[in-house]
Image 1 (tube, rainbow, N blue to C red):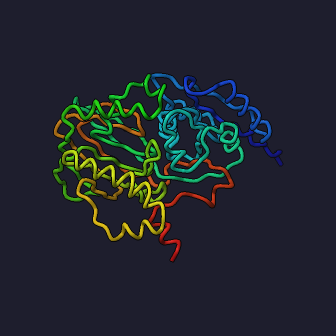
Image 2: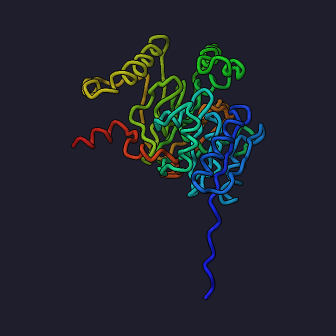
Image 3: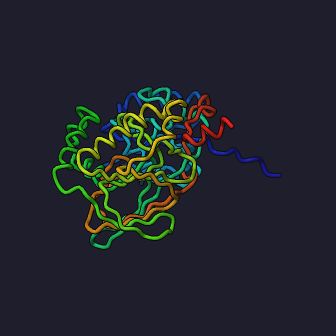
Length: 344
């Protein structure tokens, strides 16, 4: 009878942006938690300008990592999620930078490095949806990417493309004010053919279309109040302002109705009796395809992806495992519809 062979000890992989993190502090925290958990020495995978984390995450999974810690901004988080999406390897968020959008939408701790690192070794896994987009460029080339928060085409993507990265590093999300001012100077109407879940194509004229897996944006702006990270569908909004009054309607809807009234039961009840404004059109679906008349800027989770002429976005339900604190597993964010259903 052969002797039992012990399984190799587990190890964590750290995919980190060396520009965004304090590497010495990070290494000290990871080494301490790994030792306390009885894990093997962690492995380190720095990101590069050429690869912001996708290849590193794929390599970490291939190397047998039990968990991948993603240390950096939203771009690093998105790239790591793309690398380990549809695997059993969970991602632990070590947020830094301007947005921290996925961490905010999951209501995870921000700016508590040691606490976040501890979660990698002591937490539990929660599966969330992963968005996947196929992009077609003007030259006919195609590429595929993942996102965890939101994708967008139109003025929001132009805003991001026009934002000075050096200014963003100094003043944070306020730098987007400069970007949107630049975007508004030129022609900002997008003409496109739009198709939802295989339905009839429609021609539309919009300023932006945003496809959300989560609902909260930079600055804690609640754009998609019914979005949930694990419902298997996208929440989509088309912005169609007509002049200054249209933009005022959008600001009122997003900042006051979504940002204030929808956060209380009484406010939601009041809003149930109001009509939707035509400047904002909300939709839901599992797959959306659009083709633009002219090349347009496109963004994923706040990172510009260049100009596209066609996009196909689809949901991978439960496509990403996220490690969260064990104490948080019963206090998870829900969509408005789920909150109401729980009361019945």
